[in-house]
Amino acid sequence: MAERCRICGEPATHSLGSYQFCDRHYERAQRQRGSLWRADLISVVALIAFVVIVYALDAALNPKLSGSALIVFGLIAALVPAAIWLVFFYRRDRLEPEPKGMVIGVFVIGALVAAAVGIPLVEDWFDVGSWLNLNLLTQIAGNVLVVGFVQMTLVYLAVRLSVYQSSEFDEWTDGILYGTAAGLGFATVLNIDFIAGSGGADLGLGTIRVALTALVLASLGGLVGYFLGHDRLEVRPVWYVPAGVALAAVLDGLYWFLRSSLTGGFATTGIPSNWIGLILAVILAVAVTWFLSNAVTRELRRVVKSGPSAQGDVL
Amino acid sequence: MTAQARPALIDWRRAWTDDARQLVAVLLVAALAIVIGYGVKTYSQSQTRTVTAGNVTAQIPTTWIFQPGVQDLLFTAVDPRNPGQRYSVSRPSAGGNDVNAVADATAAAKSQLLSEFGVLRRDATTVNGTSAPSVTYTYVTTRNGQLPQVIEGRDVFIKGSGGILVVTFESPSRSFDNALSTFERFAASVRG
Image (cartoon, each protein chain N blue to C red):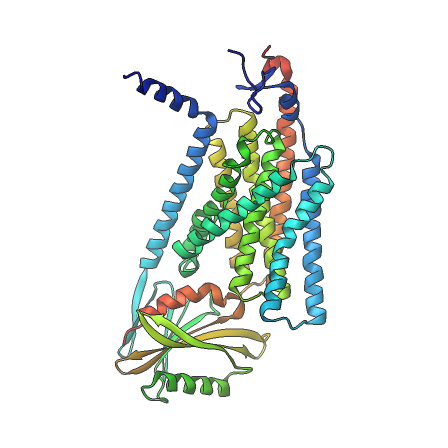
């Protein structure tokens, strides 16, 4: 029986490990999407600029927003990180763009799973507010095992059960792209929930909260997506994707633990405590982007070096 | 093996691909983590001790610090990891046995003592299945050598056998909401 391409089902002409590919998808499986890294890093810079501008305007003008006006501003602010990332990504991905509907669809699925499962599970069923801060053990274990694993597993499922089987999911960086979109969708709903739940956050502080949540979940969603993308194009050990989700969950939990510890009212770093969470989020986002960029480059170099002679033509 | 069962087994083997194995493995790892997380939650919530002041008792986590009070204030409990947050129980002498009168008197007294005091809202909450008046307020601390800090507080007024008990939670405003469920559990444990 003729081998079929893993992505599109057409007759296969090449193989990567145990998986077979047609000419088109073999070429795409070895392509690096440089626009993604640039969009990620520019989005981080643009988001910081957005926070600084809103914070400065809030301090200078001291606007007296209240009630519905404050909630409306907060909801707009909650959508800004996703809008910034999408704009920069599509501006830099004009050569062979991913379908906009697909990326926005995964963003919406990430938002829906956060609203339908993530928030009810963590805040209502686990009621983390009542026990998370009891002591150091509960802070670390609760943030990693409950908050981190729930968020990252749902981001994983948002990608895995939607676009993963699609023929559009055919490049190493596609997992990172769709993971980032799912993470941003998740973060957007968390931010809307926070703003609605607090009756409209303070302008400056609310914007910081929105930005750091988006940075953390988008970058760690990208990390989960990297492992998914790798698994899509090469046969990996059974522990590979679970290890990726666990790594992202641990980083996610440790971030929220550090943020609450360093901004919990007795910060002695000399930096205003409200900004510490954002600084940590920027460090995490840049480090994850740098790691992913290097990891994809290294893996693609390995694939190209092994070449058709090593991997073997099917025909 | 029957003829019908054989195709089903083949279908199952086809479906059990590398992708399916990874999906099941992720779900197993996540389920394990969440079960352990639930165990941590259950264990941490069981680690409480009973504190007593007069004939009033309450359950607080073993790691919290208990401080007996004087006059109307029966005791205060503080979580050392969140030293700005204070949980207390008092039995005010003013106001008699009418919870609404005690709520009015308590708010009036605090407005005289606390800087920039203001009532944010007054409503009812449910403690152990019983409706109890609740007053949420704010004020600004002005301690020497420290920056002013906005404090948010909530008084819940419950009927005790020896009079009205005021169960109070105060916290820096930014962390107030996060600790409300802890306060609700504390308030539900107060007896006397």
